[in-house]
Length: 190
Image (cartoon, rainbow, N blue to C red; front, side, top):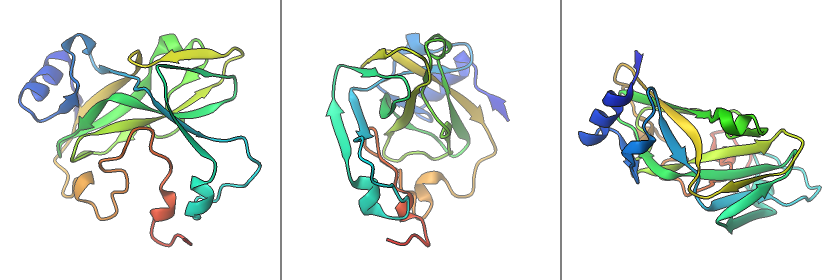
């Protein structure tokens, strides 16, 4: 296992193994690729209704979806965003999303817990949903197209079942700022 460095990322993209659409060579860092923020966001309204991850109606109730060139994230606010780039990983490369330190210094976290992307995600290529929260003291404006996070790629042994081949791969081909689909897990109540 090893993290891909700049020239290995370029080579994987040029060979069509790693798909990043749109791809911009200037976004390659020594050990990562800067992904940009799309213009699609979603969040739950401020209602007092409890969200039950097993109940699709409660998950979908009060969802707000917007397409904006910029969005202000207030302190304590949680918003789903998405990468501008659509991503497709081969069977032997996993991705890990990490925040940009310049934004973290403003209090912006771009993935609350879901920073790992399985080998074989996603066929067709799909945007990565970002769980954005402002843990700072001041509102922060985020702009569509800005570098929002870094994607680190690690070469692994080839997996037996890629994410896109897995039964119930509920985020394969996901739309931008995809909401939770936990209720699709086996054993869910609805």
